[in-house]
Image 1 (cartoon, rainbow, N blue to C red):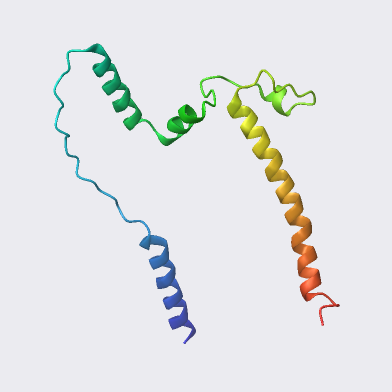
Image 2: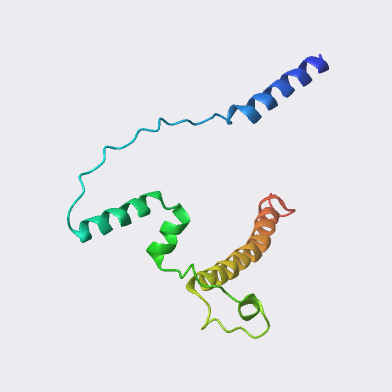
Length: 126
């Protein structure tokens, strides 16, 4: 009986592990080419549209939010003992703010979770 249970558990684990690994395939069809326009504005705007269509999600977010993704940040000025965020790019400021917010949420969770557990299941919960 225990061997049967182990075999069922192993088969279930394999099904769960490999059940989500489906291969996605898409048919690659070429879009019909648009007629070439004689004006330079139409050509440049279509080129920009093609570049925006092929851009990755991170570059679309960076372009849309203007986070200055092409600029480098200095970690010593962001996380060092003397902070100077005025010269840092916007993406570094967002990262710093997210780090602080996550640390605060973690500390609150470390206090509120055990406190709620103690109140709900502690010696005075009767």
